[in-house]
Length: 322
Ligand code: NAP
Image 1 (cartoon, rainbow, N blue to C red):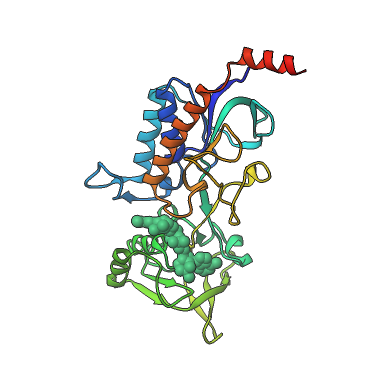
Image 2 (cartoon, helix red, strand yellow):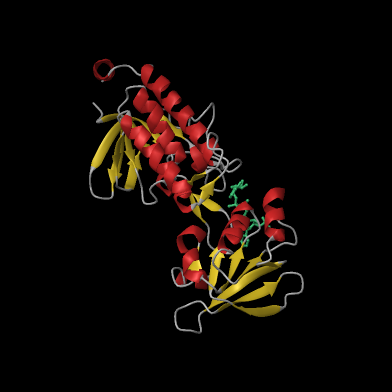
């Protein structure tokens, strides 16, 4: 007999919505929070596109409310990370980093996606020393200083605009000559007098001549190959995300970029394992779509459990096949 009917890994909008729905279906879900509790919205400021809040809501406040709502209906939340999963045998086994093991009849994977880094060594080496992937976490440290944002998508524009509250100047470094960001974000960025653009360029090195703190970047123009140096105090990298699926490699089918493949709703290639949110969606990637798929995963898991033979029947069947 399994310890749990439903275990959810991940505590962003997908995981917490799956928890809310499965708790309200009397499945007493266990939610394993993971390292980045609350997910990407914890790193956001005002969320203006979550329906129901005409003036917007701060990302961390939204996640606090979602978690409290899931707990109110009986979700148990544990603050731990998952070290490994065994999806080959039933019930599934989840081994936590602290050594505990949990068995479950069904699993909802909502591990999300994490910020990408550049393909150079110096960005990671100087992470926390002037290089960041989170403007809302670290923007405050750059009051009155010039900084760069790398990327041309909505995240990069959002971060650049936000960072103008602190920085003396924000230089957006983008590898093409047009932005990927939505028109409204582009318009806002172009209209901001503190934002400058360096087009067709990539950072080849983050410099730290001032002993361990960012002092500038070396930039290559991809059309002319010319190198130039820009003096600045901080670099914010906003070039997209990588799905957190290393735990499931070899056990669930993933696409070529590592996203979990789901079919027929949120079903993965292992019956009883469902995936929701950014870990299986590289198209929409919105908090509201993640929450929607979390709801779907809970309903899919509930229906799967309804059709599972009860434990005694399964033991009897196994015995009769022995
Ligand atoms: P994204 O749309 O995939 O954009 C990533 C950007 O980084 C692109 O401009 C890309 O350049 C660039 N890039 C990727 N790899 C790079 C590398 N190795 N070196 C340099 N540049 C690199 O990612 P995102 O901006 O994080 O947005 C993800 C999703 O969330 C999107 O659907 C977006 O609309 C949504 N989002 C919405 C909001 C909002 O509505 N407020 C805010 C944030 C995000 P190329 O353009 O050349 O590919």
